[in-house]
Length: 245
Image 1 (cartoon, rainbow, N blue to C red):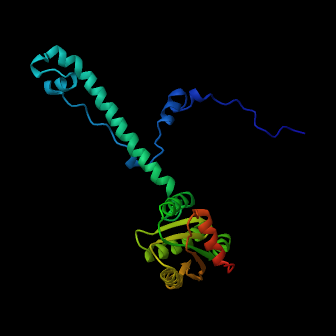
Image 2: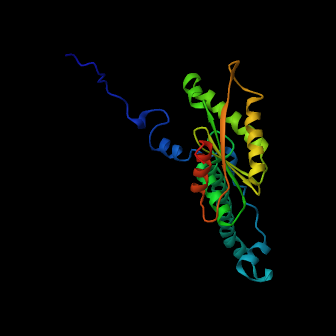
Image 3: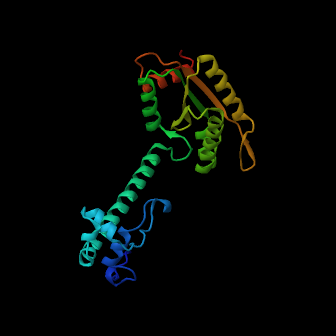
């Protein structure tokens, strides 16, 4: 049988345009965060005698021109290190915020929601935990594609966020399951709010490619008891949604 594979010699990476070690070094400097997470360091400022005196702990009169020249490079290095520290703090804060957000909808992800709910329940907070599940989104994704499913999730999330307070928690637990913490609410208030959310999901309806896509939401709620954690509270709300409690 003949050899169907190509066997021509290929050029080494060092001979390709932009290849070689220099290319690898440039690739290592590619930005992996959004543009606002990076800043260009400012041009070094001219340091005065007062700057040198404050660093050395000497009276300004004892800082001569040779001493100032010798200290200036150290002052520039201190400024550079301070700038790098500020950059690291900004990037860390951005990454921490990103790690708590859902990748598709503007709410908490499961890990962040459970953590915040555990903290709320551990602090003897009073409220209602609810679960809203919307059937049909997975079928919509399979029929019309990923963009349609994500659009439906955003439609659902927008109605939930628009109906709750800033003090309430909203998280997407995965798929089309949304969890809520209605802080300080009682059961009757929570049920009225959940009915309102469900009704608003239907009007206006979700439209995809000119076609009305019906939303089929169902909800369950649970008033956490002393000693319950986030997992137990969410599981109880899910059992209520399924008519088991």
